[in-house]
Structures are given as structure tokens and as C-alpha cells.
Length: 330
Image (cartoon, rainbow, N blue to C red; front, side, top):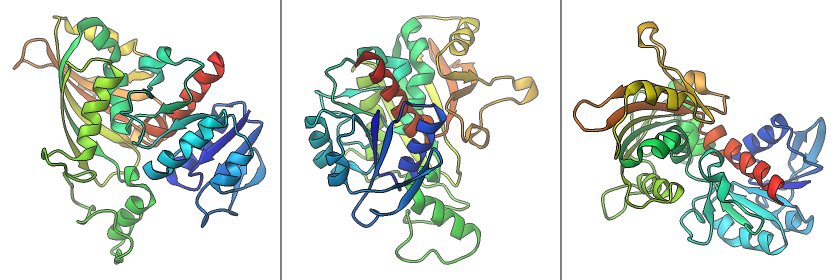
């Protein structure tokens, strides 16, 4: 299968290529594409050197599947062109996520709604993905009523600039006016802003989590509120989640439901101080859940701690999983 990766030289694009290889996706020809300035660079794939091409050149090579991770404006312009040429597009940008004609897919949650007619499929926000994977089976059993989530998001979510700023600050080197990913220092600091602020006081990142969760669960009645925070961590995003359900439950069933959730690993042994941490989620495709406990302040409420590698399950792996599902229904 001819597979294009748009944004192949970026952090997520490189991870997509890595995951394609790891999961043995049937790639007969890899077509790495990027901006004009990156065209001509070389990428190693299956022991062979592959040259990065422009998007126009990639389109002319007629890929069958294209994984996009080059930003919203690129996806807006080029995803329809690839789709019109018969190529299935899986887009990691925010542009198509809330388009009512485009499906927003997390395979473990709603992959069953994909069909052969889908030409553009949206990959959700990284923080949304790990949360809905962890909550999905609980939602099926007890029906989510309200979610309150606070995130602790890795600098890798800001790409190379975020990693570079943290690294230079830790080394005591000047960041430089062209480099900063953040207005404030990130080392030894937390920044309670991810993306720009909207008129309602929320950031775009927070509204993504709210709107995307409702779309993925196909239920606008679920109340969702979010606070997203950038933290000086590499390796994964963490979330403190309070979930209120319509139905009552016992905690044994809650633990068993989480344990049986596809794509989830329950790490919860408070006697041995076992719980998820981004340091140990790095490089993994699973969503890790722990610190599960009843919320004694609210009826039918629980608290959870959810951790995942945002570059993998939060982006690249989820996209490749969608591609895998498309090959089964083509």
C-alpha cells in the first residue's frame, strides 16, 4: 500500500513513520512529504533511504492512505485534494475535527462507525484520546453525566520548540528570541494556558476537549469542563479526571470494567505506591489508569488519574490504528 506521511520531518510525522514500521503496516511505498524547505531531506525506512517530497509531488504519486500532521492550514488546503484523488486521509490537525461531515475517531471507542465511504477522518486531540479510551466502557455501563478534567501536558505537545526551550532552560542557556514555545519559562514552572484564549475565558485546547468528547461519545448532554496546563515533563500527558455517572455502581465493578477496557492498563495498588506516571508511559501505546476512587462528595462519582504518551496513542498510534481499520473495510 502506498502511504504518504504529510509533515514527515516533524515530531509527530516522524513518530507516525516509526509506528507504521513497528506495527508492520503493509507499506509498499512510503511517501514522506513536507514543506518546500524540508523537501530533499532523507528518511530511513525499512533499511532504505527515502527522499522527502513536496505535497504536490506526494499527490502525484497517488498514495492510497495519507497521514497528515502538518497543521490546520495545510490540512484545510490539501486534505480535500488528496481525498478527491481517491486517497484516504487521516488528519491529526484540529481543522476537520468538528466538521459534521467528518468522523472523529478513536478506534477503541467509536471505530465501528467507519465505513468505506469515509475519505477524510479526523484524529482527536491528544488529551481527549486518552480520556475517552479510559472512560469508554464505564460510560457504556453507567452513562456519563459530567466530566471535570485537569491536564498536565508534556512539552512534546508543543513540538520541537517546546522540547528545545525546556532543554536550554535546564542547561542554563539563553533560549533566544526565535525559539520560545511559551511566553514564560517552562523549567521549574507550570503554565495554565495551552493555545490561545477565547472570549468565554477558556483556551482553545480546553474547548477541544469539551467539544471532541461530546462528539466522540455522540452525546452533547455530557457536561465537560477542562483546565489544561503545560508542565516541564517529556514523555506523556497526565490527567486528573472526576467523572459523574447517571447510574450507581460498586467500586469492584469499576475496577473490573477499567481492567477490561481495550487499550487500557490499570496500574492501581496504593499499598505498593503503584500508579501511572509519564516517565513510564513514554514509548507505550496503552492508556494507563490509576488512583481510582469513589468521589464521596457527589453521587455516582469517581476520580481517576490517566496517563499516556501523547505522541503515540495521543497522535501517531491512533492515526495508524485508524489506517489499520480502514484496510479491513476497504
